[in-house]
Length: 333
Image (cartoon, rainbow, N blue to C red):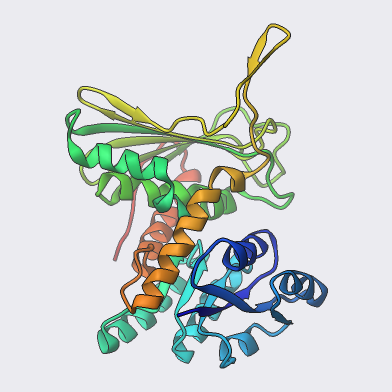
């Protein structure tokens, strides 16, 4: 059975999703693409042999669309999700679930009401690191206890550059949100409290962003995790994660396929952004979602409640940034 997909958003992520669904995912076909920029929607749709529209809700209502992928601006996520749920359409939404906790709560309530009635959630959330082979191996290592219990986690997230209008808050909700999901997922324990430390500010950072920052996360099991968040590192994209256990460590390997030796130096290339690093994760995530739809099974992706928990941790972290060095508890009520 082929699942006919509508993709909302024809920007970087939406375009990549359309390409993957049209060329690399079995059992999927793109039938519609929506974007507020009609020319962009038409261009992306044409490459997949799909129809285009500037009206996302027209896409959601279409009888030619079985399921929807949302890759539009963060501020539109909650509204489009609720439209999909009302239409009874399965939906995969890129992170975050919504920019704010209250919007997330509304989405969770709507999704869980449907789940209680039908026995299956319609909503999946795109935290793709859960499908990255390296992160999955770190999770297995932490859960196995083969080197004793996990004691600490160290993460680094460096990007080439931030958006000109980036702020400290948006750095949390759009970038650090990945670790706010992946760390509790790795450890099997929710984040209990967070702290924010910031030293000397990069001259490349826009006015509203203190960059880089050093973030502390303590999960309910007592494990302390660190995150260096540097959006304007300029040299390329780099993400690292290491789990420190009692008798050993496990860390992500650099994903470069080639190391060059020349002129007395050894070098490996860095990608310009996150997409090459997580290309496999995105494909594996999409394929797992499509398979679940074909089989009528529950989705193996992150849930709406996972998205709410990440948003609640983000809210605490934004508050912590105003009181640097002070741990702020995460409110899950």
